[in-house]
Structure formats: C-alpha cells, structure tokens
Image (cartoon, rainbow, N blue to C red; front, side, top):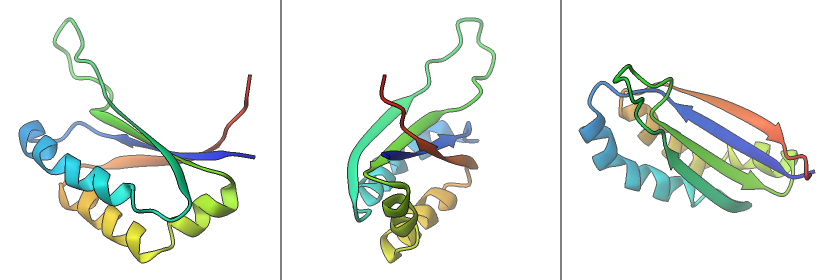
Length: 101
C-alpha cells in the first residue's frame, strides 16, 4: 500500500524568517530516497485574523510503509529534519496509508 508522511508545521514565531528558509528545507525533503511525490501547502490565514492551527503542511509520498520508514532513517532525512528543527518551529509527523477511492 502507498504511504505518505504528512508534516504539519506549526506557526513559526517569525513567519518571514521561516519562509526564507523553507525552500531550502523542501529541497532537502526532495532528496529522500524512494520519494515518489511531494505536495507542499501553505495554510490560508483565517478571515477573522485569529491564528491558524498550522502554518504549512508537507506531504511526502512513497510506494510503501517500508520505503517511507527506510527513507526517514537515512542521512538525507537527518539533514532535512535538522534544517526543519533549526527554524525553531515545531511540527507533527504522521505516517498514513493511502486509500484509493
């Protein structure tokens, strides 16, 4: 079964600084072995001006759970996660089985 890793990236303290670093962070994600597709998204601001529940999502698609698990144990993943953590922004990671409709 196909698997995706979803990273839900929290609101950064300095969104401008985070966005300036983000393209490099995403480029490191694209180097993960076995990666089939990347889907990056920025959360729309709320119309009433209250904080959004997250700043961005990043979905990383793999052929299988095994491929995804192996990918996050590589030096490329270590570099990617170090860059993301280095922004000072927290995130939640989810491994999901993709169900085709």
